[in-house]
Image 1 (spheres, rainbow, N blue to C red):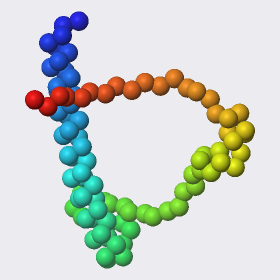
Image 2 (cartoon, helix red, strand yellow):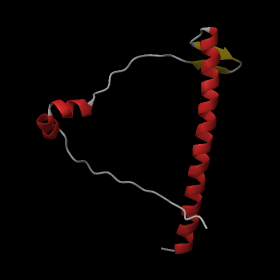
Image 3 (cartoon, one colour):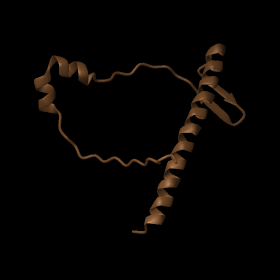
Length: 95
């Protein structure tokens, strides 16, 4: 394992993740702007040039595991299990 090669890769990973976060913020802002325009015009679908945007609001159901555990801790423990997982993080010390 060449330490310098890994250092370069880790620096690049860190820089790209920062760019990804910045790009996601820009994407979110643009999407919010388009959704606001669609809401203002009362449309859920919009075609402009080659692009079509659809903005649909709906309800979904989610299982509230915290409330279930508070009410039925014994069942919660009985039906939960540990599963293998992994996490990879990169942090950069600022000089």
